[in-house]
Amino acid sequence: MDTKKIAAMLAAVEKGSLTSAARELGYTQSGLTHMMNALEAELGLNLLVRSKNGVHLSPAGQELLGHMKKLLEAAQELDAAAGALREQSFTTLRLGAYASVAGQWLPSVLAEFRRLSPETDVVMDVGGVIEVYDKLKNDELDCAIVSYQEALCQGLQVVPLADDALLAILPPGSCETAAFPLSGFEGREFLMPSFDFNLDIDPLFEQGLEKIASRVRHTNLDDAGIVSMVAHGLGVSILSTLIMRGIPENVQALPLEPPAVRRLCIAMSERRQNDRNIRRFIRCAQSVVERLEGQPSALS
Figure 1 (cartoon, rainbow, N blue to C red):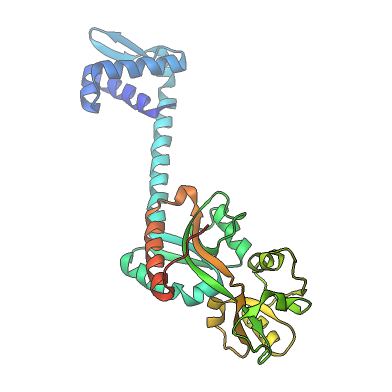
Figure 2: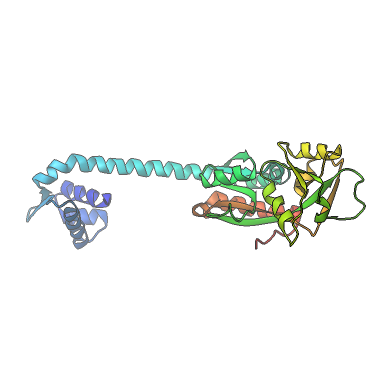
């Protein structure tokens, strides 16, 4: 029910005149009369008594007066609560990211964001691929820097940031070439990183006519743990350039052949893509990442 009609009717009763109420509310008299007729038709009751002396409530209108006032009060409380939430969305940004992104990019991005938006508080949430995507879709995060996953991106809006090259992580001195062929993983013990990084790695082993069959060992290790295992000759792995920047390199970290990347982007729900804070964060992230990494990638 349109509460504007009820508010207009109560104003007319208070003024005792449709003409006076229309003038105060900014309606034409015919427009206000049409609203009153529509309200009475909606309720199936005559609410107003019209005479040459003005208007007043009918018996049915008197009976419903208390309910109509409560409805208006509830509508005003709803508007106030919605306004408070809108204001909160302008002053808080709930941001998700992977640990590598949080360690390498976000300090510079957030410093720039704070300079442009000092009134906005950023709440950080670091997690794995599926965890971050789930929180986006459950409205627990406003936006997140994630690797592009076509299946997980359904219903989300994405903005590209940069391609993060994937590297073969090998024991020291185990390869003499400048790049490591994917076929070199065939039959080797492969330490699969945790936090759903397999979503970026599995397609590499499944591309082409002949799938690569390594001996995959799923781990519950963080990135530094994977590197330590490889350094001690306990297997090989694949990590990204951004990840390896935060880990002392006591292993060989070589580009893959053919080259492979994880495509990092900012994801948000489609209904939040015009949020003022999110758009400002996107501009800051694009500017900083372009300065750090070069031109951002284009998602295909």
